[in-house]
Image (cartoon, rainbow, N blue to C red; front, side):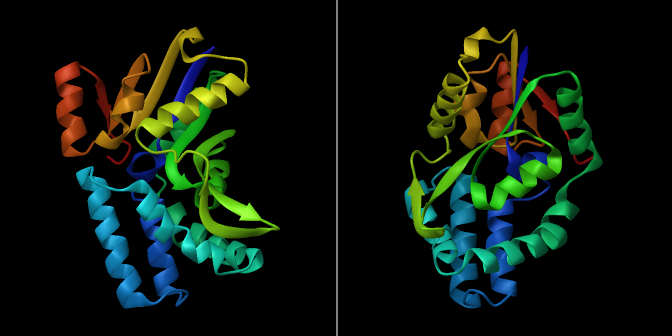
Length: 221
């Protein structure tokens, strides 16, 4: 069996679901526009630069989940999927995922974006396993805090290893393991698989992929 791992934002999606969720809340009037929009942009720029403090960011990003009911969040997310996410999914991305599933590969979406935002996106792609940052919940409501290790940078490696351990497997057991990502923030996991693939990579990852002879593809052209 082969293993296929997919990053989500700016990889399978032609955009960032975490950032767009924040902007959706701004446009829907759920959060205050000026302050939230400005801070959302700052954190996005820090992520791109590789300087993001993930715990500080999650304190910001998960706060709106704690402020509203599950019913309201589900209703907003349905609109978010229709208006923001579906237009970011290209036919090339769908074909890539379908190809791995058709070959019987073990497939997982591995993303720093929280599972509330990303679980419906994984289902849209038909990817059976989701490894994401987990928002803490109690009594059916989110608390605004993160549960466990954020699925970010080295945390992605740890979370993938824990997931495989739960399946009674190890990364080294697969005859081929692929990870598709756009970001230099994912170097730790890209280095661990036998087939790292840079997808529409940022400048830093493009340089690293060229230096190491990694495959580079586009899901947007």
